[in-house]
Image (cartoon, rainbow, N blue to C red; front, side, top):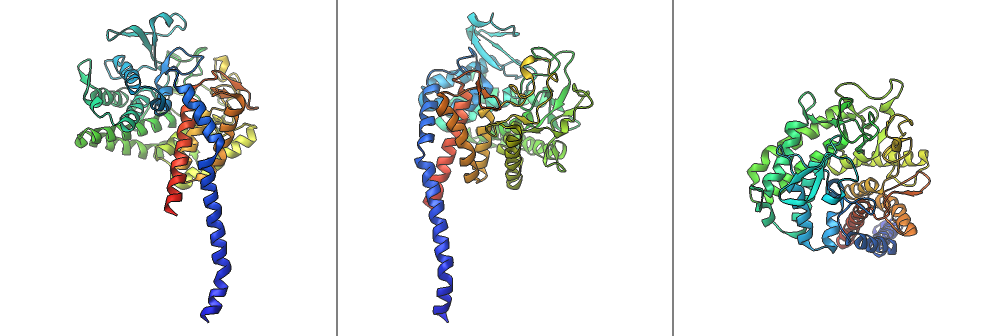
Length: 437
C-alpha cells in the first residue's frame, strides 16, 4: 500500500520540483539580467552630474530630488546631498511651506516665478508652484531616505536658522495640516490638476493659484502626505523621540481612513479624480469619473492605502488602459485623456504631457509597489519595456508619446531614480527569495 501511494505521489513531486526550478531560474534571471545592469550603470552616470531635474532644467526640484536622492547617494558625496536638503530648509516659509525648487540668482529672469530669497543662500532664489500640494511631503520623504541610507542621525539635531532639522520637517507637515486642510473631509486640498500634475486648467501657464482656481481634493496629494507622515514618525523614532511622533501617526491613520471613505470609488474600484470644493472647471458633459489616474493610484499603493488584492486589480486595469490607448508602459498618466481644450495650457492637449503622456517617473513607482506587495513576475515583466527604451534611446527621457517618441529632457534624473530604485527592490526581493529556498 505504501509503495503504491509513493508511486502515485511521484508525478506530483516531480511537478513540484519543476515548478521550483522554474521559479529559481526566474529569480536568478532577475539577478543576472544584463539590461538591468546596463540601465543601472546609465542611471549612476546621469546622477553623478548634479541635482537639477535634467538638461532641460536649471532648478533643483524637491519633487524630483525625492525620487533620485537614493541614487545620488550612490555616486555623489554625502555632504553635497545633505547641502541640497539644507538649501530647501533655508528657503522654508514662516508657516512651514517648502518651495518647489531653488536656482542661482542669475537664472531668475528665465521664468516669471514669484521668487523668494534667503540670507543663508545669498546667491540663490527659490519659487513655489502653488497649485500642487506635494512639496512638503516630498522633502520629508527625501530627508527620511537620506538618514536611513547614510546613518547620519546627527543631521536631524543640527540647526538651520535657529531650528533643528527635525523641527523644520515637522513644520512642513504642520503647514499641510494647518493651511491645506479641509475639515469636512479630513483630507488636504490643492488646485485641480490632472492626476499628479502641477498645471491647473484655468490658466495658460497654470502653476499658480489665482481667482479662477477650482479647489479640490485628490488621491496623489493625500497619498504623498500619508507616506511623509509615516516617514516623519520613523525619523522621530530614529531620533529617540517616539512620543513626539504619536500624534502624527494618528493623523496618518485618520487620513488613510478618510481616503478610503471619500476618495475610493468602491463601485468602480478606482479613485475619484477629484472632490470639488467650489465646483468643477470642466464642462458638464465631461464624465471625469470615467478617468483612471495611474500615478495617484501607484502612490496610494506605496502608501499602503490599497490592499494586495486591490493592487493586483489596479495593475490589471492599468495594463488594459495601456493596450486601449496604444501606449508603451503603465507610466501612462491617466486614461482616457481629458479632451483637448480642457486645459488652457496648450501643452495639456489630449495624450500630451501630464494629460495622457507616458511617464517612467510614475510607471516605475507602480513597479516598486508591485514588488512591495510581492508581485515579482508582474513587476519584472512590466519593468523591462521601460528599461529597454532607455537602452535603445540612450537616455532617461522626461515622458513619451503614445507611440514611444521621447519628449523633454534626455537626462531626466527623476526617471533614472525611480528605475534605479525599482531595479534595486526587485534584486533584493529576488535574492531574499532565493536564500529562503
